[in-house]
Amino acid sequence: MLLYHTREVWWVHLGLNVGFEQDGMGEYYKRPVLILRGLSRNVCIIIPLTTSEKRNMFYVDAGVVAGKSAAAIISQIRLIDTKRLVEKIATMPVKEFEVIRKSVRDLL
Image (cartoon, rainbow, N blue to C red; front, side, top):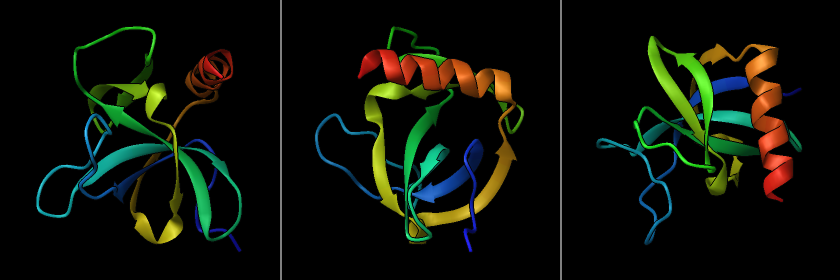
């Protein structure tokens, strides 16, 4: 049984990354992410979210998440173990999710 679903936004322990990789914030390196696709109960593909005002072709509007305007950083897609999932924040509306998914397809 999956404990997460596509379109959900979660706080995730991303950890400290290297170079230009997106990492988490605070003591536990947490960051909000969008579940792009579940592959099994143990792994899923995620896209980190940001409230940064920076916008370019790799930052796609994600609407309002937890009361803040957010963007999906589609260049930072990654596979994570579901043990990194901490807490569900919300479920993204279908319209915003489809725009992000199309942007990912166009990127790849």
